Image 1 (tube, rainbow, N blue to C red):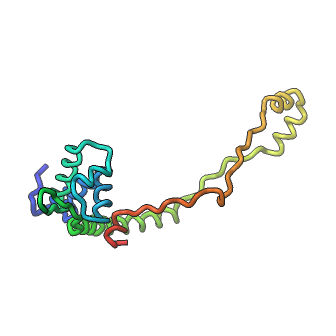
Image 2 (tube, rainbow, N blue to C red; image 1 turned 180 degrees about the vertical axis):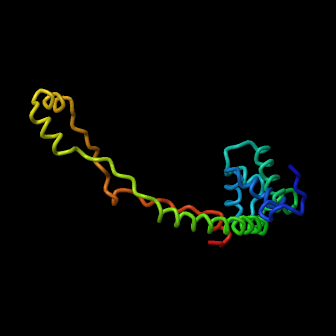
Length: 178
């Protein structure tokens, strides 16, 4: 199998996009991006928001910087980190463009497939003829009735009793791409 050269790479698989998706693969790094979307923070301020060692925070920040998702600006003795959304926009747009054609083809195939599928027969319920036979044999029917226990029903909470679900903000919302 021949190796592909750099010119043969798909736009969604270039180095920048690869670094971006690698950086996004970690929950703490995604949370850091969300925090940095709200304000510019120092490494100490970021570390205060996480329950992890400062060297781990530093490693996550360097991965985010390498992916060009954040930038650090030195002010005095502190480095202030801020979000850079250009690389994220590029990677997401390239991936969406690459998968859009394949997705449209898959949707069309799925629509055609559902039109040609035959419905499976449903499981049949108790046949009235069988119930008559069991009624004629009282010994067997009484054993079946004795072994069956009524299922305990758990009371369901009313929808009004439940608190509203918290709204989560995704990366596309963050970048205004939704």
